[in-house]
Image (tube, rainbow, N blue to C red; front, side):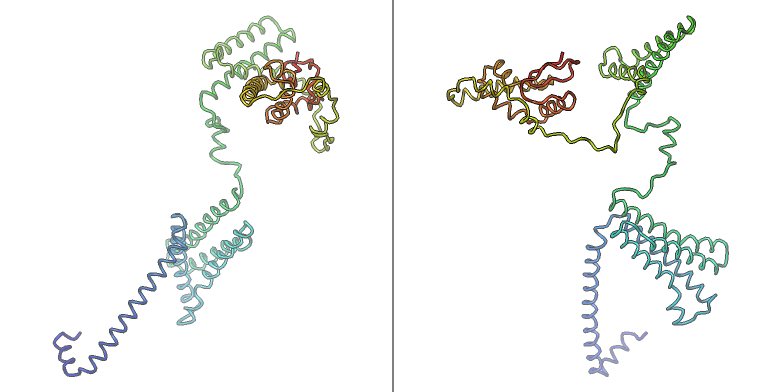
Length: 409
């Protein structure tokens, strides 16, 4: 390399040539700066558009898959030269044709996933071509360790691609492709080591103790009905008494209304198993008969309340304060009645709150369209065939539902 004194002497001897070289060097430097600036801006746009929106795991997947594909391509380079005898430009052009086919199939599979929610035949081609590349690369290995490495690299790339596709499939469809029947969670639930629901340990323990009480009661009742011996009856009653003692001690059965109701529900279900034989459930594929709507049933019903209103004298005009107080009183009575599962008549509202009957009729016509009141009226029709007219007879059944002033007995 020439020293500084030699360069200075040459510049002194050739000033024109040195000036031309300096100008060309300056132009090349400016061009290089513009190229570096364009590359930097292009890299920034690529990063902002393609890399920044992606999660970290996707970027790492692409990097790892690229490295694995490079390892596979290096194995194919060796195979093309040693086995196929390719050399020079021919080797450079043909050594990585399988890797190019793998990348092409992967791109097509991703497009199919976005359009048809399935990788299709291209997804299968990725695995087939990857396996072919791995086998061909390993055939030219010099040792077992090298063969294993060349087999593993393409398969790692394919596995990372498959996992990326699975995540994208879940994002697009909202569901997994398959649900395994044998999973660690299901095995734990089957062995009794885990719960399939979000119940706490105390809830699970309480449920099991209440179930023991119900089963012991069923067993004792069955022995009594079949005329079992006194010894067996004493043993069954002792088991029932023991289960009840443990339930009261560990579940708070004596003062917990919800668990008392749960116990009674279990006993009711166990004691009435034979009633299932007499059930006549509806046929699920039989069309249901058409039913008239609420408005049509009201038009078909007798207008007893309308007749009562016609007999009343016309109400005199009232001021805003009086009307507001009537609305508050009528609404309070209505809400209390609805909470007791009772839809009052206009006459009931007028009698209990002192509101004029025509105004009570107006309030009721609006409030009965609300969700709770409408559900009670609809249930009365579906269960008892009663139409909302405001003049219903009492329903001779348990006090489950009452509408329009008709209290259940």
